[in-house]
Structures are given as C-alpha cells and as structure tokens.
Length: 330
Image (cartoon, rainbow, N blue to C red; front, side, top):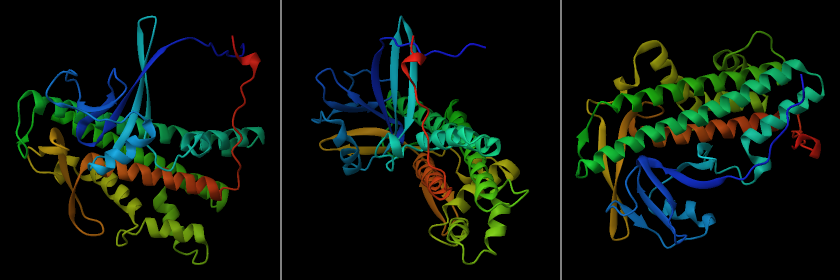
C-alpha cells in the first residue's frame, strides 16, 4: 500500500452561518453581515442587512438580538463540484489548540506513538462521536431552516402553529442527535474507566456513574456524579440520558410535544423583523419546563464537548498533533 498524498488545489469558498430558529446569516456583496430565512432570495422582504463587516463581532451581535449561533458551513466549489464543511460553534474553542476535535485527534496520535492500541481505539471512537454529534446538530438546523422557509413562503404571522409533510424530518433529526449524544457519552465513560480509573468491564456511563458514587474523595468521580444527578441544576448528563432512553426504549420525541408543535416566532432586529421557527419540548430535570428543541440540543452539545475537553485534561495524555511534511504534498 502506498502512502497517501495531500493534493493542494484552488477552491472558491463561501460561509453560511446557522442560527437558532432556522435563520441563516451570511455576507452581502458589500461585505456586510445579513440575516435571512433559508432559501429565500437576497432581495426578498425577509432579509435584514447589518452594518457589521468584522467576523469577530458576529457572535456578540447575535446574542444582543436574542439569537445564538449553531455553527457555520464553508461551502466550496472546485471545477463545478460543490461540497460543504460543517463546523458546530463551540464558544470554548478559542484557537485550533482548544478545538475539541483537534485535542482528541492529538490524544489518539499520542496513544498510537506509544503503541497503546487500547487507548488509540477508544480515542478514535470519541473522535467519531464528536463529529457525529456535530453533524446531527447540523441536521436539526437544516430541518429548522426548511420549516422557516415554509412558514415564510406561506406568509405565516407570529405565534401560528403548523405542521407539514416535512415536520417528521425535524423529529427524526432530534432522534438521531440524542442517539449520537448517548453514544459519545458512553465512549467517554469507556475511556475514563479504562485509562483513568482502570475499572474493567465498564462501557456505559450508567455503570461508571454507579462505581463513581463509591469514590467519595476522587474529584473526577464526584464531577461525574454531579452531572449525572437529575436533581441538580448541573445535572445536564442526566437530561441527555433521560431523553435518549425515552426515545430508544419508550416513545418518540413527539411524546414530549403537542400536536402541530412547530410554531412561528417573530425575531426583532431593530426596526425589522424575521420569522423563525420554535419547537417546544418538555424537560423534566431538575424542574419541568418547556424549551426550544434546537436551542436545547445546542446547549447539550456544548456541555458534552466541555466534558470531553475535561476528560482530555484529566487523562494525563498530552495531545500530539499529526505532523504533515513536504513529502505528504503533491
């Protein structure tokens, strides 16, 4: 088998920013930020141009108008072939060195350099889980975007509840996201059991949590106990487990919503307004409340990445990034 080579080529790249509610942001030809409904033309009435040109100000502005960034998509074209590269927005990733994918890729490479096949394999599983969760988050955002376009094209007023043939795609995307969150949760638990606690035959967070309740003086164990406690405000892992177990063993996510659960909401941007989509789901932990499904999934994913970053920090392994030399380039 020959060594793979990296080919350098010129491509045209454009960036699309995914926002909660199915809204999208991008850059107008004049370089200014604009916010619009997915799939609607730039000249439509459902687009607002913002006088911001520097990307470092984007997140602060979105938050000032009550919007959060789900992620961004770099769409490229080379010789007529279009591709896109998705990046879920992680506020804790201040640089490439703090990017969660970069960290775990480096840890996997460090295990490989040590000839530790067990550590290498479980680290690769975690990388897969991180990327899968990120991709499923994009799927939810895409489904929201399609519904926002539908509501706009039908001239829906705010606070209108509706459903259509594609509503199922929203629920399916949420299902897939929660399943992948459960998978990543258990990959991280397996890593901790094997490489930190050295506990045999533990491959699920439920098993690890049970063992951690007996490790009273271990700070890592107590951290796991706290995030898995449904009665604590910090018990976000318990929410993940509850929702994942619900859809896998009991009932689909529709059981947590009302019929025609999709609703339109008005997003005020200065003197302008845009139509966004809301899907309320009921969360029982620690107190019962309703929250938008996409916003909740964004919040849970960031907490999972933060936990993955924490696991990396207590692993005792220093990431060793793969080095690319001139010999790897064509």
